[in-house]
Length: 267
Image (tube, rainbow, N blue to C red; front, side, top):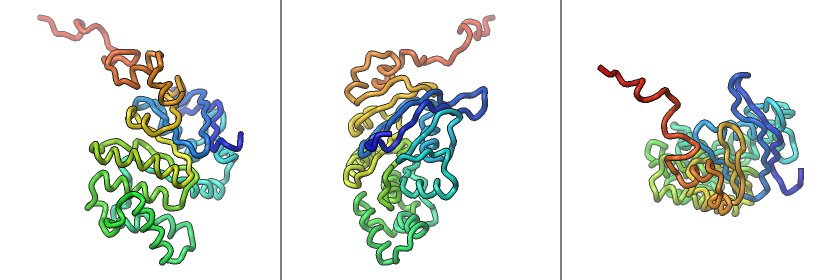
């Protein structure tokens, strides 16, 4: 793997059982310092790909290499060591409900480092300040709006200055203002931290504004990839339908069924 690529995915296939393949023959490279989107409709295998990168799953075929290491060859200690260099923003945030915003962000530092509490305090306040919520550090998750909770979760994801930040549907369920804030933070924090970011999403237009490169999955197969401008200009019917949100195209509006007249009870 070239030194400027943080992640290499080669000929990766994955199946929960022999009858239901989830991913087939996936090839990807994620360069260091870039923001890369993985797009596709629901059920196309996007989140499964994140789990393979994080080592939660092992590929059925092929390999995933992160920072020069094959994830499926790592032992438990090696896998945990690698994960401590990753940040994850889960869909809807997934904050610890019984911990304040401050303690949610401090959690990783207290678990994985020996930093003194005064230093933990200062770092947490810096991370919350970076997402605009230093003044909300005492609030509990139940007191946060959806957009605020997502930002606290983002502060938690960057608490240890990770080499890789993974976002699983970061824009889902947000109002336009919160969505814009999160979108801009993804780009700004990646550049400020010198990290690499993977954004799994089906919010096409939002993602195309901030990412450097796009991979498009359909039914577990990589069908297209390119820059945002290349994806917008694609003449591939499947990509065009997805990027522009068209109802008619290769992805049919109607679920496969017999003729409509056969389902009508005619007297």
